[in-house]
Amino acid sequence: MVETTIEPAAAAPIAEDDAASRLRAVIRQILEANDPAPVLAALGPALAGVEDGWRDVRRLLVSPLVRAGRLDPAIAVLETLVQAYPARTDDRRMLASLLGRTQQWERAIAQADAAAAIAPDTGALQAVRIQLRVQAGQIEQAAEVARQTHAVALADPGEAHWWMLAYSRHGDTPAAAAVAMALQAEDRPNARMATVAVRALLDDDRVEAAIVLGSAALQAGHDAPALRASLGLAHLRRASEDDRKTHALAHFEAGLKAAPADVRLLTLYGETLLRAGRYKDAVAPLRQAMDLAPDLEQTQGLYARALRYTLQYDDAADQLLRLVEKSPDKLLWQRAAIGALSQAGRKTQAEALFARYVAQRGQKLPSTFQQALDALEQKLDTAPIPQARLDWAWTLRGDASADRVQWERRARWGHLVDHLLFDWLECREDSVEQAMQVLGELDTGERFFAPLLASGRGVVVATAHVGPMYAGLMALELLGIPSRWLATAPSIAQSSYASALISTADQTEAQVAKACMRALGAGQVLCLAVDGAANPAAPRTDFEGQSVTYSGFAAHLAYRQGVPSVFYTPRWENGHVAYTLEMLPAPQPGEDADAYARRWQEAYFKHLRAHVAGPPENLRLSGGIWRHVQSADRSAQR
Image (cartoon, rainbow, N blue to C red; front, side, top):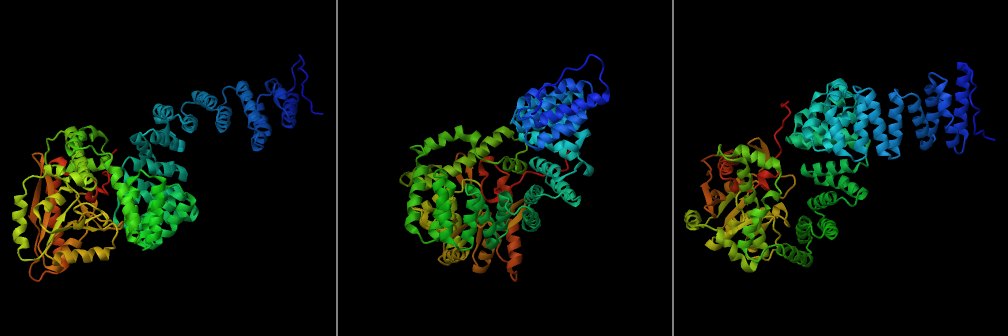
């Protein structure tokens, strides 16, 4: 029978050997008891007679209990040790860990705090304080402890990832990056530390530093799927062609070799293949990611896109219809599904979904265009514009004395008003003339195009995603100038201007190119936003420190068809839409197509640069040159 009581100690002092034997007897009884609670009361008195009794208790009692998963008695034993040896930090640290494993967060944090108070300069103990608060969801408190002990992380960086993690979770990216920047090569002892540091640097727009740190970690043998994912993202942020098409893919591939079922890596790998133009290769990883995590809408959307670009139109349409069913209010999926249904030849379904799409957007519009304009002021602060775009545009401004706050509000207004014009054109066909009130004087445009069209040849008009783009459709319609516009609107659009569109949403690139040549052959004005493309692998070029989408199609088309080309951008002037119209270069005698395209591109960007330096309401800040804008790399800043 298991003994459950201990005889009281004799009044005379007990020899050390006898005390140690008694302690071990108590340890055996606790291990063997079905209910150790009654026996635990004897542990404290037994420890009193043994100077280093904690050694046997930790080795012979706590470790077996933890291995057996008996955490409650292990916690009780450690609490006894803490009482018997209050200055020992290791016992408090282990007790805090076990209390955390059983989600007794307040008790765990109290023990961690007590341990750190005994040795406040010990990084591992301060790290446990932060770790437990992070795990308990107490992010504000974790960040506060990190701030109070920031110097400890720099002096003893072995656990610095907890400081970086607490800062990052709290949104204090500069503080997290400061820790990462202070780390030396020998301070990155494992892949976990390196991964958190790379992410901290990326979040603080220190892209080059993230790549250098992550690469050094790999060279030191600290490899892991999470580190590969972060390094791949860093290369995508740096965004050179080699970064996008080689380096990022190599890191994602290496990560998947170690973790072939990692959904995040599969999605990143598939998306990067898609954007590199390797459409067939993108299908398999995206399908696998979707099978593993069917609720991830973004992954399913990418998979549908890969199916479309491998000419599997029906399957692409089915995937997008599932997304519409799961998220019926998400307009992005509706528009994509309409294009996919059209490409699949499922016109009736496409038309029905388009009608629903237009009606759903129309319900959110006020009864008059003027009311819609007046309401924009209340929406300025919530305009969905990434800060990186505003920051970049600010560096391009021509007015050095501009007030930043007012400048940004005007930029946000320009963004919102153009999208309002688009909604009104598509959703309020019966009152589209109300939107035409924003158009300014049109005679200048008519006089500009008249001599160009007099010869019966067409004209290539090159524009960009700037200014009130959608006002151009209304202007040319009013002028009666025969025109065609490349646009992402589906061919089934029912608005009055729909016949003027060449849809990139539901036609192949070859079909679009043929439609463009037919338009020029018929003597029409062909309008193309050369900084935008539906193709996920659209080519890019450098413009004012950013990698922007740019297609040389317009320049080559003008060269091959022997037609004039014009730079065009709409802009706001005294509350109405005016138009910038400038001739682009004509081919010189004996000039080949590539040389001409380079000269044409230089002239195009010169005009575009002048436009974006102007009033901020003419920026638009979405699509085209804005799509891939990244924050400036701050790696060199301390």
